[in-house]
Length: 148
Image 1 (tube, one colour):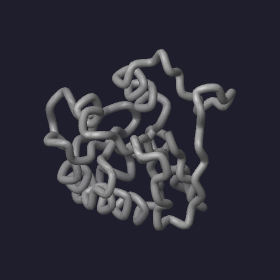
Image 2 (tube, helix red, strand yellow):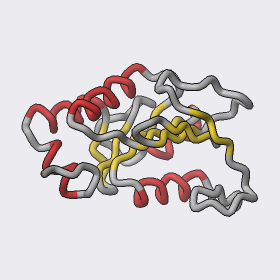
Image 3 (cartoon, one colour):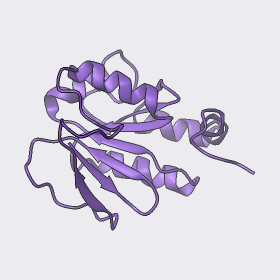
């Protein structure tokens, strides 16, 4: 598992490549091993499904995506325009099904976003929340955005 730290918010990526390229966010790569004592430590006994559920509950705003997903990029850009930077988890093809199961938007292996532990869906659902002026209040409600 790699964590990409940007100047604004950490980006977490899980993938099978030994040395993934740095993102264009200007961040640095921090490699975690299963033996680290960090609160972000990986429990090797934890199943993928359990790990995904834990990440959903621990992060007020999280996006699950596949590597190099353009829709995920659009999601991150939309969220940055309202002043929030999500945790982004990149999953392999077999793992993305664990995150998107349960119906709703984001099916078919595209990105899926969770706000406050609740599945919002894919890009269309996120844009719909934004266009109906429900996105910012929801982000404030779950603590992902501080609105003065």
